[in-house]
Image (cartoon, rainbow, N blue to C red):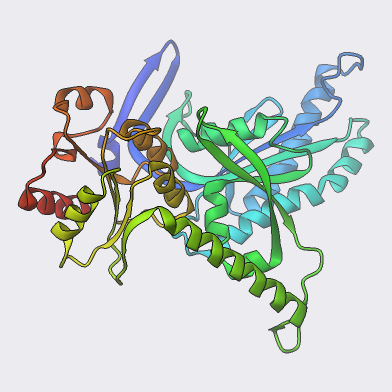
Length: 385
């Protein structure tokens, strides 16, 4: 039997059948909402006109999405849920720009679609609302024909942003912070597209998830012959680089220790006791880890949000911290990327309670203070391997 077949879980309810998988997939998620007068109660459209309207609109969108390596998962009334799969490598700039082009093409082709609708005496599409984000999704096969469905925090947040009147604007592309963090790492994309702050989606009362408005820059000041940056643009880029430097420098004020090296195994330590951070650093000397430490859990969370690579990352958390405890921080980190590894180190004797409260947690991911050096280093090494 194929390995993947062994990981499917069946759930039957009535005539419906769903297969869930233990696998998670990193991809881009897209919600597209189209608005028109088709459902206006003051206008009369028979069922054949309504079917023709949805068929025309959805088929038009499907062609654009398919050309840009995307797939429609399902139609939710006037909304489509799509996903794009070419994103296992977050350094694949071409794939990310293809997705941007897909959203822009949908907006730009609206007039062409509307001419086709008007020819058939159907109402035009007044506007689109497009929301994009990047993250981990879980897969399921649903229905009698086992169509692919996706679910998880990335889908949920993207859906809520798309349905929020204050965050998702008509005929605009709105992207979530995870997608934005990756896009801003590509110099060509930063040069060709403009990003503006669009407000925050409230995950909790104290935690916000930033969103951004994405547009193509109207005037790209480049020299096509020499392929060099125009002096005005160069000045703007230098100014932007300076602002980023100052911003990053200010962030480091919350660090207690920051040790850099070329190893790709990364550790983030969060504990409000500076002596504990110093002790952990001494324990881990000689292992060539990239170590970043915080006494403020909010600064640690923001640092993780700004990161673009979560491979080979371990976060070591204290539980009793002011304002944002280890449980809350764990929840927020997992909403960013559930593949991030987490090790709890606590003075509390609550092993059984933790295993009950946090799904998927094992006893190897919990250590009691004061920690034994050998046990601590071996645990870190095993989790990073």
